[in-house]
Image 1 (tube, rainbow, N blue to C red):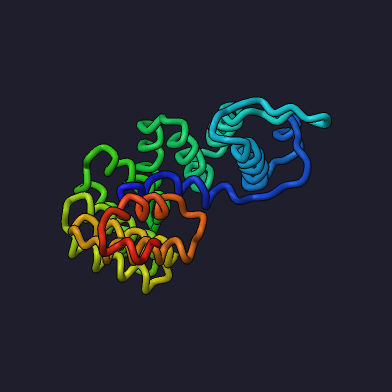
Image 2 (spheres, one colour):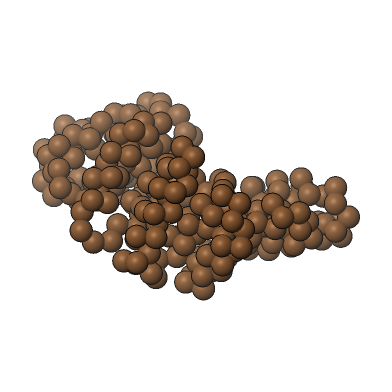
Length: 242
């Protein structure tokens, strides 16, 4: 659960597809609609990042795809053009987070959260940044406020469970995680975080059973595989793993 970090958030916002790639100048000139422009930039960003996490130029016979830093600067420019566009602000915050500019990301997220209405994705990312800074109280306050507005949003509960976990409040974390599961949170994630809770309480058999459930549901989930391997020294786990 301590790994409940930006990795999950990088990617609700990036799963967008497009046909063809244009230069940034052509992109701005040919498209006025901010959502369509953002979609095109996200598609470029996604394509660059499928090559890895580093920001490199990718040359093709038919085009030159911009590196992710140039794409991010274009998103920043788009926000200057449309300063009240919430989706652009959220995307910018995600990219700033991924680039390590957390103060800028926090500022953008705080601006979003100051607006009326529910902003669950912003609250989740902002609370994770707060937890990374050791400020679990701020994280919990943000999440609880948003839960009042969106009680059905499972990932708010998952992230709140992470905050309780970091504070050592395992019973609160377990109850909150259970609610997240009933609201439709991914079973493999709930199982993995249940494993972390059980491991923290030295319930080795319960932890292994939870990690095994996560791997069964998502065989390529390497974090759960690694936790299982790490617990293989305990007799209670050996029969499950082997």
